[in-house]
Length: 165
Length: 83
Length: 109
Image (cartoon, chains in turn cyan, yellow, red):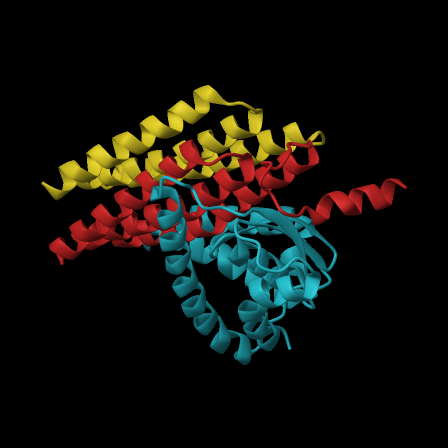
C-alpha cells in the first residue's frame, strides 16, 4: 500500500459509480455494494498505475471544470469541422502523422491529454512513447515537432500543467 | 414526428456502418465499423427506452456499451499481435 | 423541457448519421477513425442527454452513460489506430508526412 491517498480516491470513485448505477440507498444495495467494493479495491489496486500515481490538491478541483469547458468547446468545433469535411463531395483532406512533445509526467494527465487530442478538431492519437505523442492529423499545417506541438496540444497543456504543478 | 426522423437517421447510420463492415478492406476497417455500430446501438437502445418508457432498457444500453468497448479493445490488441 | 430534449435527440441522430457517412466515404483507416470517433461521440452524448431531458427518471442513468462514452470512445479508437499502424496499414497516398515511419527505420538501422 504505497499510496494511501490514491487508494482512498480509488474507493471513492468506485463507491460513486455504484451509487449512480443503483440509484438507491436501500440496505441490500449498500450491503452488496460495500462488500464488492472492498473486494475490487483490494484485488485491483495493485494493477492500477493510474491511481497509485494520483495526487490531489484544492487547485486540481478548481481547474478540472475549467478544463472541461475548454474541452467541450473544442469537441463541438471538432464535430462541425468533421461534418463539413464529410458532406462536401470533394472530401478535402491533407493527412499525415506528426510527433508532439509533451512535458507532462504523470499518467493521468497524459491520458487526459491523449483523449482530448483524439476528440478535438482533425487530430487522433496513434501512439504514446514516453514524452512523445504520435498524432494523425487530417489537415497538416506544420511538419516539425515545435509547430505541431503548438498547434495541437498548446491549449490543453497550459491548463493541465497548472493542474499538475 | 421529430422522434420518427431520428429513428430514420439512425437507421441510415446503421446501414452505412454495416456497408463498411461488409466492404472491409482490412480487418481494422471492419473493427472500426463494429465499434461505431456498438455506439450507435447504445444510442438506439437509449432512444427506445425513452420511446417505450422503460427505465430498465437503460441498463441494457449501459452493459452493451461496456461489453462493446471491452470487445473492441481485446480484438484490437489481438490484431496488433500481442495480447 | 420535452421540446429541448427532442431537439437534442434530433441533433444527436444527425451527428450519428454524419459519423457513419464519414466512415463510409473516407479513404483510409485513420481518416475513417477521425470521422467516426468525434461525430459518434458527440452524437451519442447529445442524443442520450436529450432522452434524459425528456423524462427525469432517465436523467441519472443517462449522465452515467455519457461519462462512460466520453471516457471509453477515444480509448477504443486510439487502440484501433495503434494496432493498424503497428500492423503496417499504409496511409492514403495523398498523405504528406509520417513521422512514425522514420522513427521505426532509425531503430532498425
